Amino acid sequence: MDSVRTYLVINPGPLFGDRRITFTSPAPAGSVVPLEVDGRPVRALLTDTPLVGDVLAAELQITYL
Image 1 (spheres, rainbow, N blue to C red):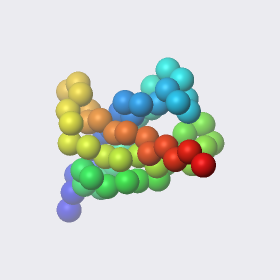
Image 2: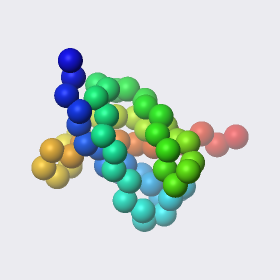
Image 3: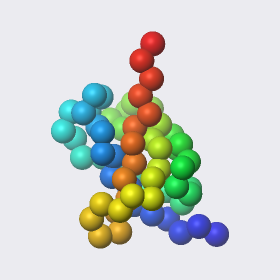
Image 4: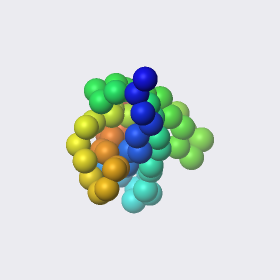
């Protein structure tokens, strides 16, 4: 079973400005997971890129129509 890891969104700007977005997930790196930020549903790509301490990078998946 995978352990739960903490992620920090590294590209919140287009949707959330300078808001710091962190969350946890047991999904493996490379997964795209759904989450809700300020009541808005978004998706984030989990990476294995370390940031600070045990925190890993995640990237919002932004689709423009």
